[in-house]
Image (cartoon, rainbow, N blue to C red; front, top):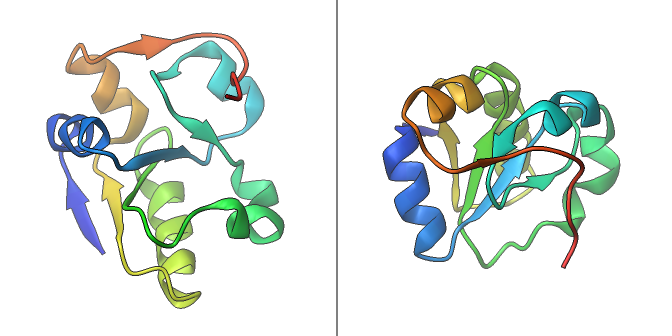
Length: 107
């Protein structure tokens, strides 16, 4: 699975990719990449089917390790367009990219 930079991750999300945060809800509420969808790793095997197979998925966590595991799991389930955001939310914040706080807002 390809690791991409926070800037590349933002570019892909702006182009239509879905940003998937696999941290736990309390971590997500503290700070998350703006627009991220929360599917905690603890619920991932039960909920991964909520994710579209026809759209690129950019996986993100705190530092990049949990999101890499989740991305590899998705690839094993037949998801072809999956990348991992290297450095995770920490890198996203350090790059000054848009963030939000609080619980996930579903559209």
